[in-house]
Image (cartoon, rainbow, N blue to C red; front, side, top):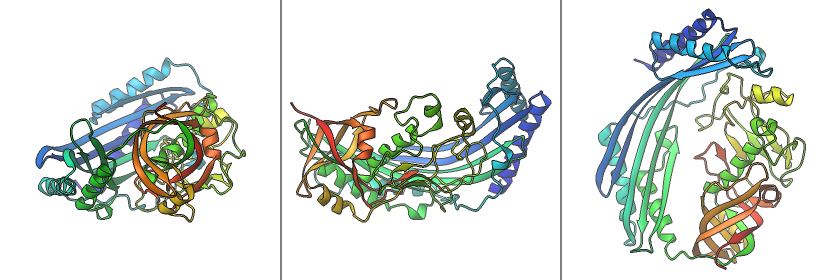
Length: 444
């Protein structure tokens, strides 16, 4: 079945769900269907480990009886299952308490234009070709340096999804999208002195992926550089987050500015609208309509039109991250962020990665973070880390078995610079980030 035919079939099923909800007494409803298929291949030590074809599907429906809400889901798209899923949602709604903030978004906010965001780029890769790619990738890593002694393997994934969403306000739309990736992880050293690292490439279009050889060699290079890693003594010093880990800092920022945490009063950035929380040079903005980007979408999880807008300008919070529900709880309007942000861009500065190392002079370069030590209520931050010790802008030796700590309010205020080595493999796009000072806990 062709993609457009699949979309039309799924749209008919969504409309059937909405009609059934109305038939069973719901005053409003919204429903979504998804179909995902793809190929995953893994190879390790020159052998094929797995070849998997995926074909998953699912539906979810939410109904409202006035302001009583019920939701149900299923992975069976048959007409009988559609009716049963709606019945389950209706049964839940009839037995829940009224919530004055529950309901569909305002009709006038729903998306009406659906530009081609170039999200769908099927690869047409055979299992044999996928195996060849994975083998090439791992071989390039294993042959890179004699110190590479073992491998966690290489993995190739190619997936296509179709999503259709509709509600009883007349919104009904669907679109296809693809996502392709190739990754490799290897080990270096002997005995107990082993180090592991990895690299990956990710894109909607396979033509934009790094080559298998590039991915394998970069994974091996990163691993070899970690040999001889040692702890640091405890100290206070500047910290440079490399681009691939810096996005987690801004992920915490998004969480702190999200409506759910705000109305529950469980965020360290409560009442921060129009307040300065970052240095004046920092701008953070959302660009949901970028062609082929990983986070692009013309509407959010409720069908509300997305739009380019600033979360932070001149270091000042200009917008929260809100769905219709959280916006009502806060007495505000939705920002089109039900389901999260879409291509959050942390505006880079003029310096590159090497320039930021020189700017730091002496301090810690963090290339890997471990654990989830972020307290969203207080902003306290403490995570295991590894990376490199830097002096006079030059990397001296690899570092491991340390913890970096601080408070996110202070960390954000003390950002010194943001490099232009932007990592595009995430919904949050940022370069490396230099923090003036953090606490390092290591050897006594």
